[in-house]
Image (tube, one colour):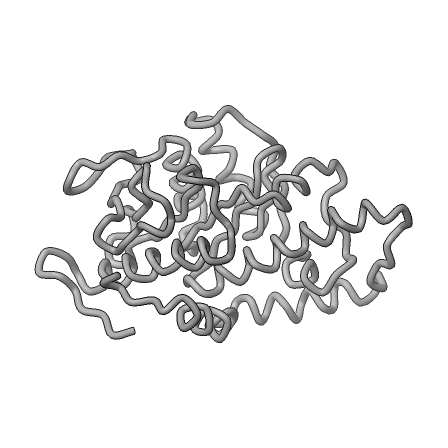
Length: 247
């Protein structure tokens, strides 16, 4: 994508706006929506104490780079006064404050993710998809939404991993770049879908050899930490949806 900053913002902010708006559109295409009630955020690289989030009330398919709300970590809207989801602010500020290496945070309420969030013993090493994220999984107990206590608690959980199952709630992933954050969620959501389906089969699933799990985890960790993780998939999805920043 060829991007240009508007006269009132830096090139870095405009880049973040375009990538975040694209991630909302990709998430809509993949079915990761819950009407207007989930949210994705992006840190502004040259203003690391600020981030962008959706204008509350817009469907993911309606979000544009210009419609995103700019906020600081104290909950102040910067620029035009726009509505934001208070629970969304608590979730995203909590992660971004606790993980300065996180630039994008993606939160979903998919059926597979919510169903898996009810399982007391979590995800098992039973699929290729779960092995993408298994070594980086964290589980977070349900807390009071929109509170400082929950904001702080989620931040602590996110110190344990970048692929988070929120008990009784849904899923959350974060990463240094937009494509890595997206692919983490894709693999985590698919892993949840397979886990839930496997529990309806009436037999115990075949698990990956326990000796292989940490070896594969180390390989996946090196891949996830690189700049290319998810890039090809992201670019293919942008072509699929015909993404342009001005649409």
